[in-house]
Length: 96
Image 1 (tube, rainbow, N blue to C red):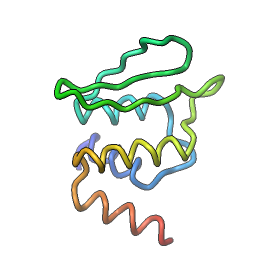
Image 2: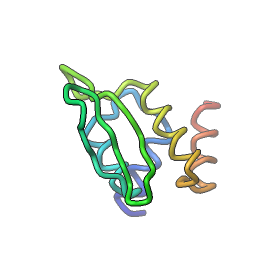
Image 3: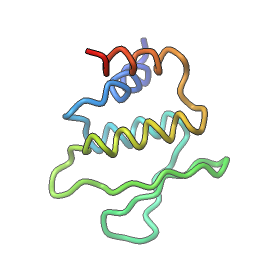
Image 4: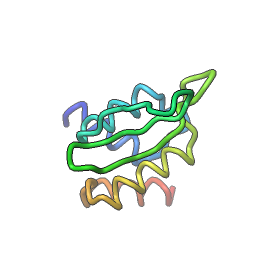
């Protein structure tokens, strides 16, 4: 299992200690690049294909809120970027 696979699996489980750096790394594995047009904590991630995900960078800490991680996972699923095994892992972790 590669480092990217481990990160995807961790994100699918929606842990309480997922960091901003991990989120940026996760999105980069899907081809997203961070842009910050509006300044402040508002961030936009874009792909060359034109897909976009808008999020707020956590502050003053670096731990991503669970609702934000759920939103990102939902967008990745909506864009068809997650595979069946990741969705299966996500369902198993939410049932526990």
